[in-house]
Image 1: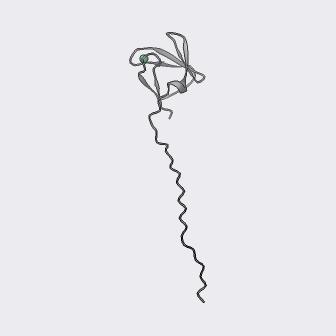
Image 2: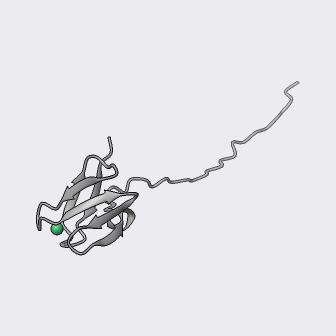
Image 3: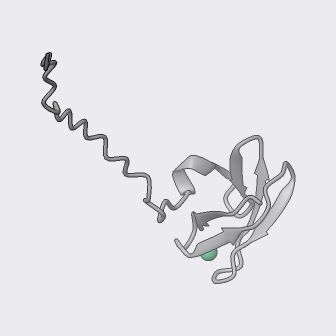
Length: 83
Ligand SMILES: [Zn+2]
């Protein structure tokens, strides 16, 4: 399921998109602006401005912190012949 959160280019209200396809109409719940998504861009009908969806996207979930810590603990390796 595609769930994106974008900001309304008009009023910056956060709009949750549960779907995304060419020709999809998005109406801002706050200011009522009508936008149409097409080819990776959001067309704001009011002003005919185009915005890249990447620019409007909200990235709130930042849980991709991969801690790469290489702890090379050299366990004492002794090859003692105990004969
Ligand atoms: Zn708005």
